[in-house]
Image (tube, rainbow, N blue to C red; front, side):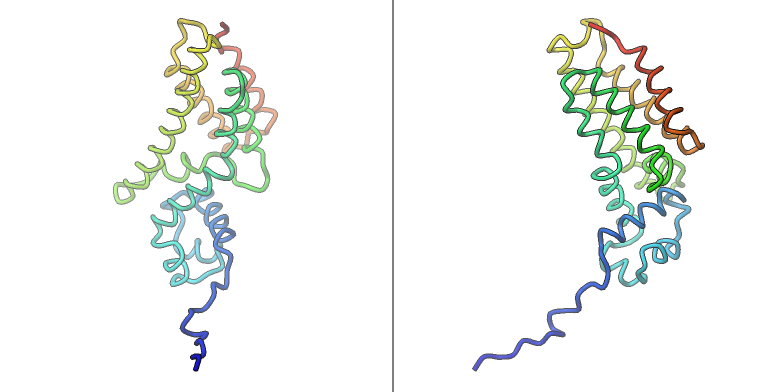
Length: 203
């Protein structure tokens, strides 16, 4: 005789969409920063209670790390796509233009989550700051490797330093993010990108 399955034993299905909840949490962290975002802010925006938050995402720090993962795969996914451009200058132009587009996107807060969200945090949240810094460093390293390849292929002058160029590009990108957070328009950000590209070395 077959035993009947007990629906209660299988657990109750989640009454919310985890991806949508992560997007809402991302907006809170982006707008208020890691320390400025309270659990009440997060649960209210995510439309869940604290037990559901802990069960699905862990504590606040774990939630923030998941938000950063989503941020890298979503709003700043243009960065990884830009690395596939055929020429080094095209790579950099796509990164700059992607930053300008993101800075004027009404669907998301202005600026950069990894700068605004985790830069100004206290010692208690030091691991969050280190994680964000490591992600920023990883992006710069990926760009540096792409520019090293460009130099090997003759797409950059022999005297060009890929590490310095990668650092320059990321400095401009972060500056554009700060300008965006301060209210700069897409046209203003694109103008910054155009000026920055004038300094790009030609082979």
